[in-house]
Every structure is written in structure tokens, then in C-alpha cells.
Image 1: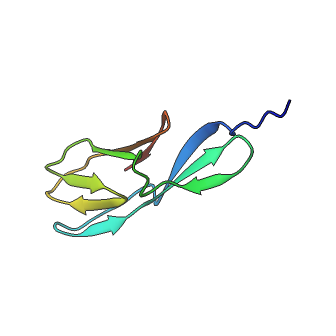
Image 2: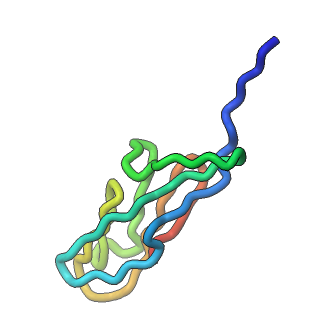
Length: 88
């Protein structure tokens, strides 16, 4: 019997993890999934990657792009495969 298993997802990393944007500006972030076997995968544009802005009046987030909408500070939480990371 041959058993092939997929390595478990152990975490996500955002790069950069901290952003400062001017009003109306935007920036790309890269989201990398880390697996138990040491392998990595870019999941920035993966259909199963979810971006959640803590305050959409301050920043929007989708598909690896974060946009500065209004003054203030907020977090963007990125979810993939039951793991999460935060962009400050």
C-alpha cells in the first residue's frame, strides 16, 4: 500500500508585515504559506485567501493589494487554510 500525504500547513507570513500609506495610495503584500516539511507556497492571489480590513474606512484589502482610504490605523487580517497573519 502506498500512502501519499500532503504536508500540513503550519503558518502564514506577510511581506511586508507593516505598511504606512498615504491617502489614496496602495501597496502590494505577498502572502506565503509555510508547511511542516519546510516547503512554502505563494498564496497571495489564491482564491481561498481572504483579506479582512479591521476598518474599511481606513484601508481596503483584496488580492494582495492594500489601499489607503482615510486617515487612521487599522489591521488587515489574512486567512488561508485555517491559518492567519496580520499586516499592520
